[in-house]
Image (tube, rainbow, N blue to C red):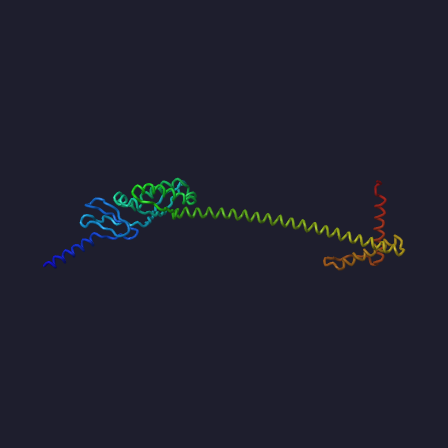
Length: 300
């Protein structure tokens, strides 16, 4: 009989030990109440409590949670947009009891604060500014919501504006405006390229004309130098100046006839039936013209 009583006592002791010892997992916090009144908060590890006196009132997760908020609002230039925001929040380790006892629905309260902050921030910006400054909007919303949630033991870790979507009609209008602006810029660039091409071609033509003029001048200069050398050679063998001029002019006459004959663009040329006679007439005409020019030359 004594053994049975001893065994029962041992079992009761073991049960009391089991009921008094509890383990808190990592990244969690247990709120302990004694007779229904808050006593303490226990974090990860093994702990003890008084059976039937203390109880675990709440098991709080200390990891970061995320809440997504989507709402429709209006920008400063009266464009309705759908804003999607995400915020990460967690329980402050120093305010676990406050978070449990002060706020019944943390996600719902946080959603209300987020929607109110977004409806205050977006209408103060135009559509273009809302896109360009969405990081600033997210920071302002995080600061406003964080201050409110900190009173209830929560910390807002990060807030992001993940999307700002105008209506399909506004998107189509924006695409049309952007396309028109790009076409305007492309037209300007094409006109600029065409102007540069015209200027470059004009410069090339001018340079070509200049080079052709220089070439023609050099060509004529060489011809003149050749004629002078030819006259000097003929005079060196004892010919008088009249005969020399006659020979030089005759050679020039033959060169011109040969050039006309070899030219691809040459047309029909009517010459005197007697070539020497035709040359004589040409010689007389040139000589007479030179003499006439000399006689009519004004005195200096």
